[in-house]
Image (cartoon, rainbow, N blue to C red; front, side, top):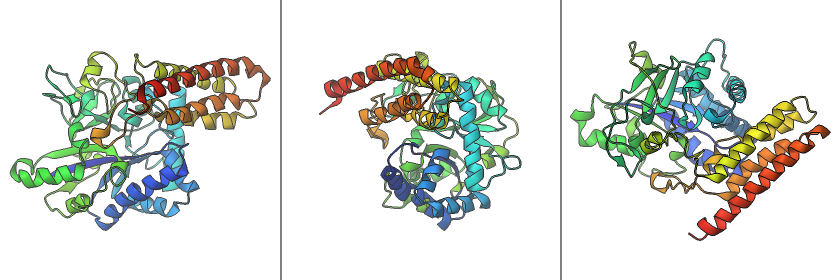
Length: 405
């Protein structure tokens, strides 16, 4: 049995420090220790650039150095991404490029990666949010592969939409293909398996049907916080996997290197939470931009307005701080927390939190407020009007629909 496991470590750049400390102590160190104690265990990992910056601020240099050692030894593979976890399909290309470049600069500094000689081969799209145009942009940066959710691939057949995981029944796809739009290689995670506590399920598959599963390849991808923060794993299933000779782990690039001839396919725009029903309705990013969600629609109007105003005033004497706030407001969390989707069945929360929506929205308005040029007065007033409209809608929805329920 081969297990290919991808972990995504991220905390918003503007979140309170104690949240980062909790996730770091419970999850990052948890995974780190398992890897250090079991050199045969191999993972592919994305660590968002903004998390490295917060680790530095919070004095986690030891943690950074230990991840660097694992990377340099080849036990873990690191991917590229966008530094501040923006929801890339809905952002202007110029912003996407800046965040990719900044993420590369951060990886170079903290992991001592020479981007000219040893650039990461893989790229993680935040929220696994794919579009053909975005994939082409990633390819232009020299990356070779993406990891996506299985829902992006192939023909969605008529069948049952499984209620527990919102995934496809009778959905046939290959685990590794060539994206027709970009030429990137694409590996697909198994969504149903990824929505469990993965090590426990992998061991269960091994012990219940060894003959059936011994030649199989299982590909999973989750937030790194699943390990420790969301699920404590008191029975140490992760360590038990490392002790099983029948289970081989490998990085994504190692797996891809074993396959030379790939089927070329056209992929659906989607994320790692998109349902088949949403695809059929042409709403590939419903969790972050649903046409029925007025708060999200207005949040995007504010986000793009703030981006345009900051761009237009790039020579402003306070442009550094304007952009500092802007990238934090553009993080996918700002929009995710307005979706109100219930993730409690898959180790997550109810995705509704007015304070977290406001956290991102406040960064967007502060980006505009930061500009010093008197010529920005009308732009400021326009942004403030939209900001007040959204804030009123958020709290009206909270007190009337979600509070005490």
